[in-house]
Amino acid sequence: ATAQSEGGAAMNAATAAADAAAEAAADARALALAETTKASLERQIVELRDRLIELARDRRFQICRANAADAAAQTARRRASRVVDDANRCAAEVRRCVARDAERAALLERVAE
Image 1 (spheres, rainbow, N blue to C red):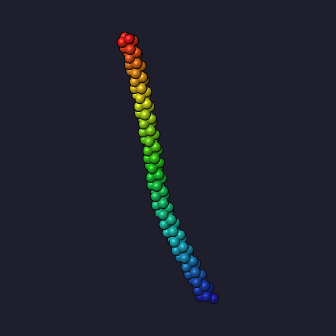
Image 2 (image 1 turned 135 degrees about the vertical axis):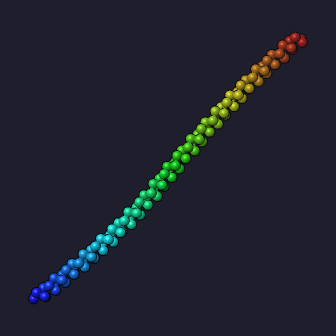
């Protein structure tokens, strides 16, 4: 009976050892999967961070371009305003010259009479 119980104990010990080994192997696979997943997530985080930086740069570039276009438009408006002001001054000067010439012509007609 003792040999039988020792054999049963050995069998139980072998089964327990096999179960422990299987559990250790499963734990090792789970750990490997977790490490692989962690590495993958770290790569994705780096890629996403780089993409966000790229998008931020692109946004700043777009804002910069819009500001430059706005500044150019303001400059063009100021120049156009100056051209209109110059044209109005020239027109006023021409009107003064025409009026002065008309007065001279009228004065010359009176003198000639």
